[in-house]
Image (cartoon, rainbow, N blue to C red; front, side, top):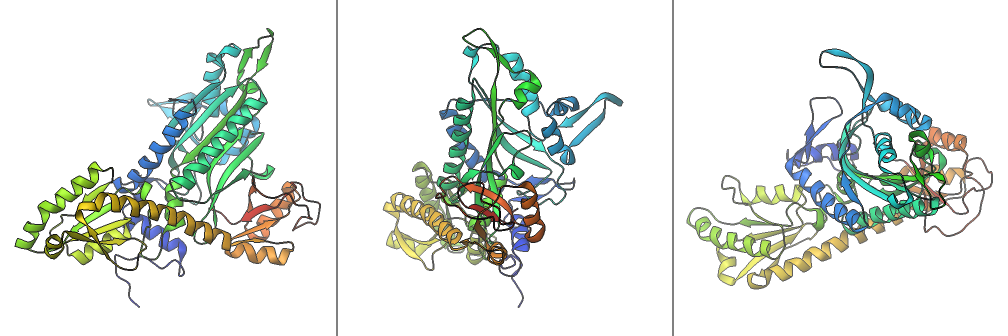
Length: 479
């Protein structure tokens, strides 16, 4: 059956094609001129701005301050922390020539900033009075992806990266978990993504970290998406860069450091957590336009409707609702309806001469099946309530979907079936080689040791050794 050229491939037919088409057709992003890069279009960038603003506010409320560090890092910096350079070497972009000459030392385009920030921390910290040092950076980074996909894995992406230094392990661990909690709340409360938070296994740990924590979301094809990570780095980077302080006792001590980040990957997460065969389904808190008003009528009727439609849009805007009037005269109302549905606008209002005469507008919500009349006089309050209800509905719907595809398993045959459709909750021995064997056999990896997972004991689903974690681990295929 032929498909409308404005539509997208159904998820059930080809989820990957659905995603790639939707990103382009909804004008979220386009492919950049260099392989693996993307141009984020205004509609997509606004989603990121809204997420960024909320996360930035929360970061500042926990006492952190924003700074900025260079894009170019001396290659020798990365080599100071052995695990770090080994983990990132395959992804590095290296500058060897500048100003028409070969550089004495190659420069790395930052894949992350632990090294350059560590160098500066060593300059800025001298006493216990300088601690804790709580920094955050909004920046771009470059990692040379072999299999790029817009928003999910691109050669260049945007993020924030928190970097902090502390007097001891207890304070640094508290910081690590504070950042993790912030990410979990942003995902659930703003993006309506029901993430699972907890610790990564040793095989999935950030290069150079002592412990890595994550928030993991389930997409509508059952795959996992790592949506934010927080790392306790111990004294590894402090020793590599000489980040020391004079303690109250007068002795020299190494700082305990952390790093944590959330990226534009979250935009991809929103698309794949909520979208359907009609297009995007945007949580109201992240929708560039929460309400779109479509005037109905041609000629004199259009002239009659436009002024009150503008006045309605202004009233909604003053009430704190992101409203947009679609005044494009060369397009039919039907085209506009489909267009805004594809773009995931939470609420659409139709306003025609008969509606005006009755003092109402016709409302359609993105997941609703029909239309209902909204009194123009009470529109701001009614629409605010509808938007709040839709935000809650999306979180509940995504939670139900995730739970329906998360299966406790005790045997290998059950495991292999579970990870085809979603997540397997399984016992794991914690051995890196065993984890590699699981990935080789199923492409599934250990996504997270759930923080709220109930205590439980059993034998590893793959090798039958005793469980290493005292609870079940979530395994799944991932992006």
